Length: 478
Ligand SMILES: Nc1ncnc2c1ncn2[C@@H]1O[C@H](COP(=O)(O)OP(=O)(O)OP(=O)(O)O)[C@@H](O)[C@H]1O
Ligand SMILES: [Mg+2]
Image (cartoon, rainbow, N blue to C red; front, side, top):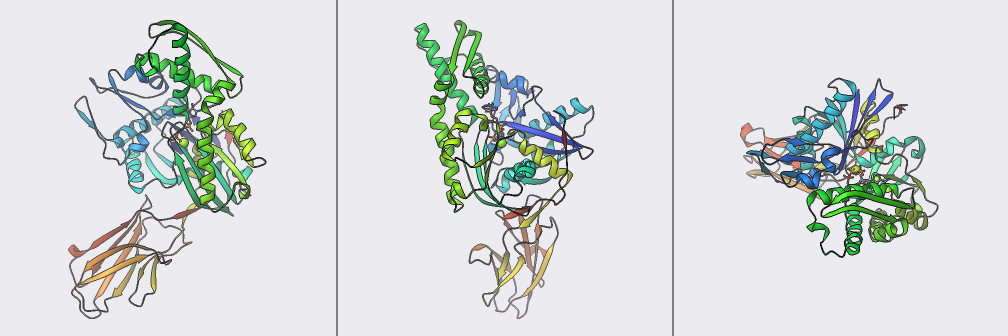
């Protein structure tokens, strides 16, 4: 089975493709992606994951460390000391991967999830890529390759949108809004601009919870803020609000009914669509503006986009659909199956991969000012393949000063290599792109020992992605 994983801030979606054609979604047991939430008991170190843990997160906060959004904490230096054990974000993220592995084992009866293609946001920093690979490795999963989230979403919907050139991607999840503008020329995908916000579904749930709480408290003549409510009560309210939010995608009114809300025995409230819409309009506006700014940053206007791909659970919000219909009228929008598109696209690329192409040149500036290219724009990225070149020192200097540039006047970095300064002393340079797309360059004088080798790492290598020509047909088992 080939796997694609969308490791989200809030939810992680894992999709497998069996025999190259049958698609299986590994859900949280309720048809949704798996929560990326890890809860660790402070006394025993026991780990809780999954939808049940997510439902009880506020209650468990009393006795446990509740770790949300671990994706944003990767490579941050954060550590937790829980029940006598040090936890790093990689170890925490590994628990989410382990839980996904377990879902696969439960569904198929076998430990099949051993390697996967993993989707990451545009501009996901190199340190986080390394940390995510390590997290997967700790869970016994090898990341075959990374693919950017918008590219994976595009590939999932290639049949419908593959003929378009300028595509906006609006990915609104639980924790973040990630927007980008991509260009598709015969399957070569280039990222033109990207932007984001830390305001998404979880924030909306809280807005609703606080609003409903205010109404309930007022009716009862009490004075207690939402944050002062017992954790279990907050949990319940947030979980019911999340459900009500989903119900309001189709319904005009959502009912919230449950027993034991703190001191209150019975809660029966409702929220109608207009109130809901009024409550979240500022958030929707913020998201829409963020997208419009990103399009502007790409040097375009909304009307110049050929279509917009809507990805992530929160794009189902009706106030957003209505707002879009009004502001971006006539623009083709593809919202189908939004919370699984990224993982499905990644799984398909796992069966039939494309390749990364260099979107920039990297070279060394010669003494005459010309550029000697080590990597050339447009070349396929040959991971871990070594490119070497030998240069001669033209000056009597105790060091060779290498200056790296992209050939467009931008200096990317410097490397100072010890030398003897003999005339025609040879300096050997070798370059390699590793699996996390970090360029690693080593250089030394051939007249000096290996100990004098100096290294330069370039973390911001720009790459495009060439989608495969053959597109697999899959049947969805859901
Ligand atoms: N029908 C719906 N209406 C409104 N919101 C929805 C609906 N379905 C799911 N959501 C919300 O979508 C969010 C989860 O989306 P998704 O799974 O795309 O997040 P994620 O990828 O983990 O997060 P992120 O992209 O921020 O890392 C949750 O807040 C959920 O409540
Ligand atoms: Mg997401």
